[in-house]
Image 1 (cartoon, rainbow, N blue to C red):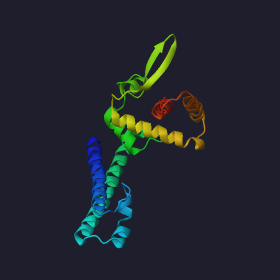
Image 2: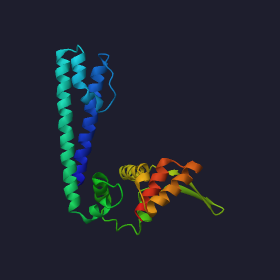
Image 3: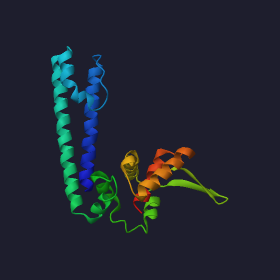
Image 4: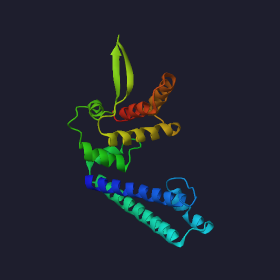
Amino acid sequence: MRALHRVRESLVQDKVKTTNQMHAFLLEFGISVPRGGAVISRLSTILGDSDLPQYLSQLLLKLQQHYHYLVEQIKDLESQLKRKLDEDEVGKRLLSIPYVGTLTASTISTEIGDGKQHGSSRDFAAATELVPRQYSTGGRTTLLGISKRGNKKIRTLLVQCARVFIQKLEHQSGKLADWVREFTGFCRINGKGAAEVALTVFQAANR
């Protein structure tokens, strides 16, 4: 699955470069469009309302076509990843965790494997730098923030998963949801960052 991930990442980067290039071309003619997919969805209107040179209009249409091609290729790769996960026991277990999707599950399965090298979920979290640094004195432990070491890709994906869980918390029920409500309330009072909250939530969900 590592090859599928690498190609997908390359296509995603190309997709971003394509919209940025279109955005830059339009700015040269005084047309400002929000970055991202807006330039794709609004291109027909822009071309109809603006007196752009014919060569530029044709070039923008080619870039729009290339963007749609990239989107389809990315979707196809993600479908292949999903099929691979359906054949992978580790991947299927990861997908059972709340809000862990195909991309996150396949990345962890590829990078970490079955996780047997870690004695517990806490060991996994520590090895991948998924826990805030701690300072203990006088029997009191203080969280100092998230380390920037470890696997950044996995850390980013897991933070996103946990944040989605928090965002949809009002629709959740059960012990985990109750614990998250209590913990997030504590963090708001004590000024803990969103990343610390999200990572702690993920660790709790994965115990």
